[in-house]
Length: 131
Image 1 (spheres, rainbow, N blue to C red):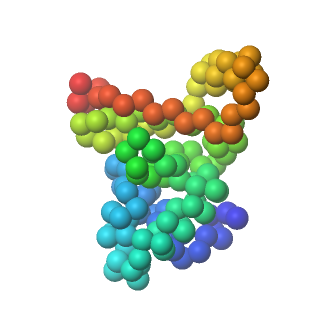
Image 2: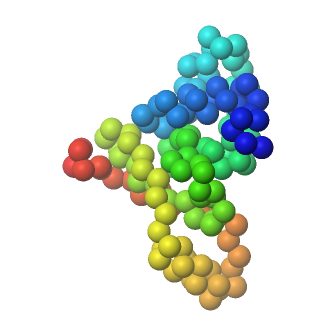
């Protein structure tokens, strides 16, 4: 499924996240989309689940919020590691990928006969503008 093949609800949720300067909770998304016919959290969660499956949206577990993928055309979820910095003052989120970190974590897991399925790193602190 490509971005052009998203359902109306999926496209609206993705647009809301893409337009936002900060991560959004599912309930904030619901509030933003009430004028577009969204009435229940389940509508948002279904759209978010599919968008996550497609690698278009990421869930920031430490703050229970969602962001649009910074580079959806690069299939960032295929490598298994997604990393973020999260500013605790302004809420700015930066998505990044580091091959060295990924290789070290893979070696660590391999040495212990552990098979990771998904790795998400969230670094919380203060961005340059807030530090």
